[in-house]
Each structure stands twice: as C-alpha cells, then as structure tokens.
Amino acid sequence: MRRLTLFLISFLTWWLLTWPYDFSSGQMDWQSFALGIFAAGLVSLLFVSIFTKSPHKLFILKRYLWFLYYIPVFFYYCVKANLDVVYRVLHPKMPINPGIVKVRTKLKSESAITALCNSITLTPGTLSVDLTDDGYIYIHWINVTSQDTKKATEEIVTKFEKILERIFE
Amino acid sequence: MSSLIGLILMGIGLLFDLFGCIGLVRLPDVYNRLQAATKCVTLGTCFLLSGVMVSEGVSALSVKALVCMIFILIISPTAAHAIARGAHLSGVKLWEGSVCDKYAEDREGKK
Image (cartoon, rainbow over all chains, first blue to last red; front, side):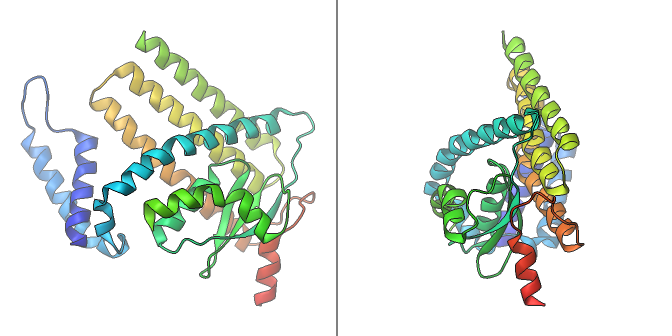
C-alpha cells in the first residue's frame, strides 16, 4: 500500500515535470512515459522506508479542504514576514533583539511537525533551530518579546497548530 | 496584458530578493542572516516563478514553474533549519546583543 502510493506520487511528479502528452497534436511521448514508470518504480522500491507511515491519510478529502484554507493564511503571514524583514534591514539602526526561545507543540506525527517547523521558519522573525523528541522546538526569534515557554508558544505556534492539526494529524 | 502583470510580479520578486541580499550583508550573525535569506529569497523566488506562470499562460513551462515553487517552499526552510542547527552544534555563538539562548542552556544541562 505504501509502495503503491509512493509510486503514484512520484509518477505524478514525473508527469508534471516532463509532460509527455501534447495537447495540440494529441500525441503521446511513449519513451518518456516508459522512463517515468521505470524511475517511479525504482524510487518506490528504494525509498519506501522514508515515506510517510500512514498513507491512507492522503485519501481523505477533508484534509485537502483544510489545506486550501491554510494556503491564504500562510501566504498572509509570509508576506507580513517579508515586510518585517525589509523594515528591519532598511532601518538605519537595525531594530533587532534576537535570541533563542523554547516552545512546546501538541503535534505528534512527523509530517505535521515538519510542516509546522517550515511554517515557523517562513513567518515573521522566527527560525526553527532544533526539536526534541518530547515536543519542544527551539526557535531563533529576531525580536524576543517573552522568554517564557508558554507565552512564546502562544505567540508563535498556536496560530498554525490549529489548522495543521486538522491537515496532518 | 498578462505579460505586463507577469513583469510586475517578477519586479516584486526581484525587489524581495534584493532586500534579502541586503539583509544578508547588514545583519550581525549567522542566525539573523539566515532569517533574512530564507524569508525574502523564498518569497522573492516564488514571485518570480509566478510571474513566469502568468506571462506563459497554461503550458508545460508554467506547470514546471509551479512544481519548482512547491519544491522551494519545502526545501528552503528545511535547509535553513539544517544550517542553523549545524552552526549551533559546532559552537557558533549568537550575536552579543542577543537576549537569551535557551538552546545552549538546555544543552549545557544535559552534559
């Protein structure tokens, strides 16, 4: 089951990258198609061990709807982060107040934590540095407002956690 | 019309890339520089690629641009995370104006 899902995903990626089917003439590039099947098969044989442990979650539609909701939220924070960095960089005095703080997350599954860390890195003034097995993430914060774990968690993590919980858990 | 919008998007992307590079030069230490580099360069490059998508319309090239965008959104923060962790583990100090370093404190405690 995991092998098959991985095969489908890697073949889809191959298809998007090479696009063997030509719309205008309706012709199919069978060489490219066959090579794609070969490559996707090789990938699904070799790298199944690092693929997600529960592929059945990929087939639940509700998760994708939450993901669609997540995209604009994420985009808003991403643009905000960039304007924030631009302000700090162009300001002649450079108003930065950096430090590494510790936050706690409720998320358990590997893909959820990966998505959370990546979101944290791309949003205002934060960069995830390391995480522990018991759910703590160390975050480099460009403008530390509170060193307390709970308050920092509320400010950095909570806004993404709620949505990501519904997508990946 | 669509090529004009594409050009505007590419211009915005280039601006963000430029600010990211200025941040890379001006900010004091590794971690702050990574912040500027990942955020601005990721969004800037995404804007560039979406400019390509808009000016191309629906074609094989714009699908490739979309796939590249998704890859960059996943890979760039992961790489930044790896660099930050590696720098901290190999003993790169934070800038002297930094407020706190819980990570170093916790690692000292474990030893």
